[in-house]
Amino acid sequence: MEDTNREKVILTVVLTLAEGFVAYILYTNNILNTESFWVVFLSYVTPMGFLCFLNYWIFSPVLIRIGLTIWCWSGHYRRVSKQFNKIVIQCVTWLKNVKMHWGVIDTAEECQNANTCEGLLAMKKAKLDQRYKVVYEEALIAVLNNVTNRGLASKSLKHETVVCTSMILYIFSLERKTNGKMIAFEGKFNDIASALWNVRCNNGWGVYIEKTDEADCSIANTFWAFRALNEYTVSKSEDYRIMLRRIYENSSNSLFGYIAGDVPRLCTTAMSAVIYYSLEEQSRTTVREVYNVKNAVKYVYKMFCYKGLECELEVLCGLETKSQGVKKAPWTHVTIEFVTEALVSAYKNGDLSLIKMNYFIRCLKRICKKRLVYINGNNQQCYYMPKDMEINGKGIYTFPTAYMAWALSMFDF
Image (tube, rainbow, N blue to C red; front, side, top):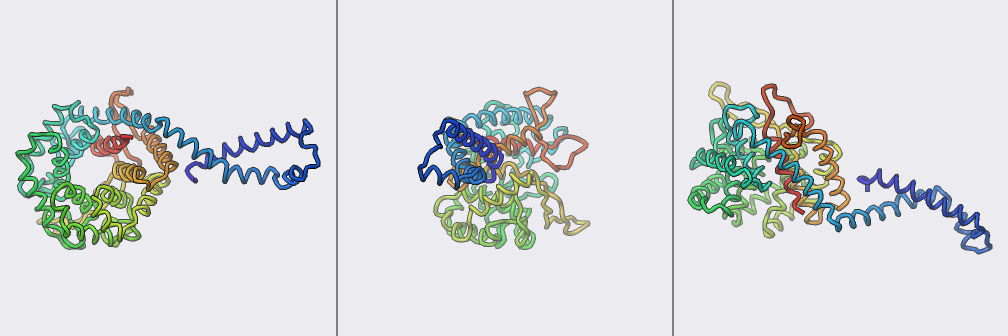
């Protein structure tokens, strides 16, 4: 009940004062002036200190839980959904109004495939793809035109990468459910999904659509691949379940770093829970043998709500250049989407309490209040700047806002 400590203190003070006032009224009206054994007994064993103890540890928590339950039943989360949906629209409106759809920053002169996919996912998940249909379809067509038979390349790395390919595979899986035009691409994307599956190694996936050294595998890349492949027929195979089990078995008490043996990280641990909840029951049962999702959820909740981690830095390995050989490159992960999806899914599956969910929502509201920057001081559009994220002197990063919109759209209670 640590998430309601302030409320517990306030309720304890109120209850104790009320009880003291009632006792005073009873005394002044001679109601307590009695020889009754129980009245005399209680007057000795219930001093104010003991009442404070009972109020803080028993009565206040019970009243808080009852109050939250009634609040929830009366439509509290529907009101939260409406509040967040307003912010989602403001974020997506800002994304729609930037110069290119989408570059790394709002002043970019060229679109990047990864950022385009992030913008598309923000619009699609927020159900605003039809509201901003022209922008959405132009960006979708542009990125589809960049897809090769091997997948989708990162323009900066000039090679098909696991994350870009996983993103477009996932977007296609969402599109084909409602967009009849996607039928023409069905065979191509099934082949790409097979190509992605075939470049795995024992530790997962590296940076590129090619087999890599096991030491260069990235857990974040691996979970992006799982997110995409879950939507394709390869996920029905026994080999797929064996691969899932192997990755989850290599965790440290159900917590994940960025590479095998790394210290726990918020982003990848949250991603592990997201993937787990998205699995079909047979695959979930297989994973559950070696993975405790409640441990992961507990860690995600603690690191986001108490430590306030809004971004993390991963150092990618396995990038090759002709002049320098293998090099390392930084990759900034914005945590808010993966954390929100993990915790909302945990709440819906009974793995996160109502009290913790309520406190998480308060944390999100606090982040929105502190980290959203409104353009021209009005409430029409805004962008998200995570705490501790580096500032680009040339413009505003687009991808944090995309992930913010995706995150808040998860509140579909």
